[in-house]
Length: 223
Image 1 (cartoon, rainbow, N blue to C red):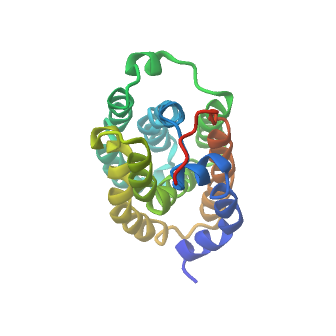
Image 2 (cartoon, rainbow, N blue to C red):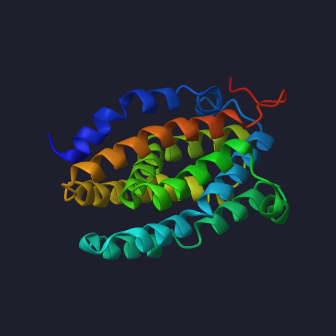
């Protein structure tokens, strides 16, 4: 079994637990309010805005014998630039105040997700951050496009309110193939263990982020 398949297998329990979070399952059924959608986007902004910083920190900490990863990191940086601004624009298109979202304090659960990754990169093994990449991209492929279409239909919002979800649902299919080839080149057992550890933990932490999003009484239920 190649390492990518090992990673998928090793994170099965955590992935399935994420996919049962009520905020997520309700949204995928179209049972969501505009306020809840904007609240989700706000927390997404607060962790996505760190993506470039995570990648740069990873590049800084990668040891000399693994500097071949610098090219990979540079590609990810080029791909991820500006995504946090897409999210803010989506908030505005959904009737929210994007500058208030930018200035808001992230939920503790979001802060923990961010802090965990910085800590792991800086104190443990920077290669482990690829576990966070796996969590985000695999989740996007499974849920982003389906969720965007269902929520847009339920809330009757314009397509301009879903650029982040729609783009990641489609973009991350090609990203995941790139990721698969990348991690299958990683043969160091300690690096593999770090990637699995971070992936398992970030599935759990991201599930907590979703659970922290309020589900309002005025939820709009699909027929």
